[in-house]
Length: 553
Image (cartoon, rainbow, N blue to C red; front, side, top):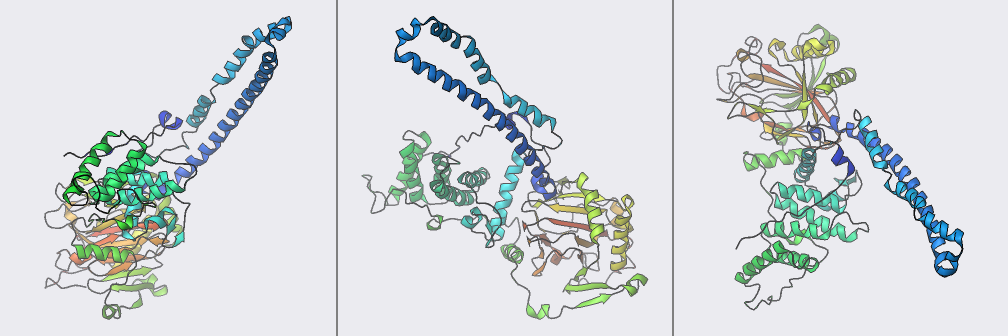
């Protein structure tokens, strides 16, 4: 038997949606862009308040007309003949229903809404609306955070992150939207979690933000897809109590009953074998058998698990390895560094992974951010099969590239990187500045081009591969946002003014697979980073080739 999927109608009619087009550009992928939406909301609040005041004035006038008409009607209806016997009353009755009524009609048909729209149009430079793609991206990001940081659905719906309340509670309608976005992505696991939460919140709400039937439609089918046929039937029966002739629900009910009959839960006569087919409330997803979709994106499961554990701050490094790490001052024979040495912290020894502290000033950071913001575009990756540059779901941020010639601070930063690393910056790519949006992340990846891949983003193929990566942290992040190396069990946490550095290649030029790294999703806060990718050309005498494959520095 065919089973019908649910696709209920969810209609939200607003004046603005019909009048304005949302801006393109994937605003959800950078918090710097989302900040502009606060100005949009302020402008809407101001204009909407003006509109409501005008409407209240109009309604007040109409209320005055109503009271006058009611008073005169009661006077006339007490004794119609006697009332109309007075010629003045007869005249006034005719007048009230002709010229006076036209005044009422004029007030009724006054359209303050058109003025409201004109005012918004006048302020279009301030008003920017996100798109449906932004809504989808924001929903997916929230679910990504839920999975990576093992956030409880109920706690998240109550506005709590890791035990701390950060925001107002989600309504049943908010939870329903998260469930709908999951459903549209084919993710029935999260559909069940969020629709279940929506159902329980619906029962608590005084002012309903979504209909119970809409919740039950999605919840019943996704519960079935997750393998919970009995509960799917219970939810479908609940839906049919409200809408008895719901065709999809009736078809699905029949299918569920056939499956339960085959399992012996329902007898041939239709009686349940000691199992209630009525819904128990509150609905508890903990009683269901749910299978979380695998999100390893081609990585071995153990490496993916390490990635998520490191993001959560779990300590995985062997204490013996950690005990060999040290901090020290370095000068690299640079005269200035003799006066002010660079603070270096070892994060791993082989491959060498270090953190340099206090290597970029607040003024330089703010200048770089301001230069980059107007040029922000969604970050891209190079497709390993086609070689084409494209956006990807596993990299959510916005970025801009800054040339050394654009500002003295940019060239100064590049020069400093060269002095600290000892590498030639003539074959380094432009400074890439990134801001991560809602749940912004970059899943485990290599910075170097692997065999048969096009060498990424270099101006001249003669530059060869990316020998090293320098990563500036330009903001502190309240929670999340670490840079992790799953095979090394290393996590680097953003600290404003510091920078991470590592070599992507062995001394013989082969890629070092242990440098696969990831940017963990940002849980709270805004993450700003900038990086320099340095290529092999001109580094022959600065980092000489080794004689063995595993030779390293």
